[in-house]
Amino acid sequence: MEIRICKDRYALGKSAASFTAELINRAIAEKGSARIVLSTGASQFDTLAALVEEKVDWSKVEMFHLDEYVSLPETHIASFRKYLKEKFTSKVNLKQAYFVDGTEENIRYLTEEIRKSPVDVGLIGIGENAHIAFNDPPADFETEASYLVVNLNDTCKKQQVGEGWFETVDDVPKQAVSMSVKQIMKCENIVSCVPYGVKAKAVFDTLFSPLTCEIPATMLKTHAHFTLYVDADSAALLKLPVLW
Image: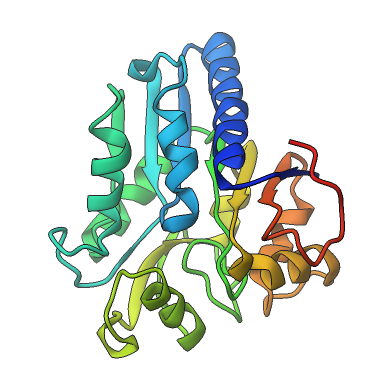
């Protein structure tokens, strides 16, 4: 595990994007193609904005979507399909993009596709309740499913309201389709971009708690190639110097 502390969200985005592009380009050089997983939400704004400017042959890259609400139309402001299409796939010439649409049929399709070969890089955010994807506590660490339907807890719903995706907690869908913890951990490299002061406790708990499904992001620490990007605000409880 490596922790990279950046001065602010913008420095974090640029540094994480540069590192992610390096990993993607390495995979392309070694195998002729690359596969990536992208997460969404406010914490990924700056990383994705910088990533689309990196020098990558995107025509050799397949992208998998991490999660999506059940029964939420793509036209809704909170739709993660809408988010990724606007902020990423419309800006680069991908070989293929695989989106989660919240249906059982789509789960079967995504499962078949993602199991065809390894994922080289996963950009995996950490929620305010330390969830990874929509695997809220207590997360299922044991399921072998690649994607599954999960229930969203109140802390998760409040985060979505706080980020401006919904007006009230009652407006947030009760369920989502999420990539499973085990499938996330199969990524060859995991890069977690976690800016903002509202994530400070989640970052602290992730780093200083033992492995537990009550703090799902603790699982990331067991990965052989896990890089955590935080800014000065999200690292406030760590009391470590800013390096980037």
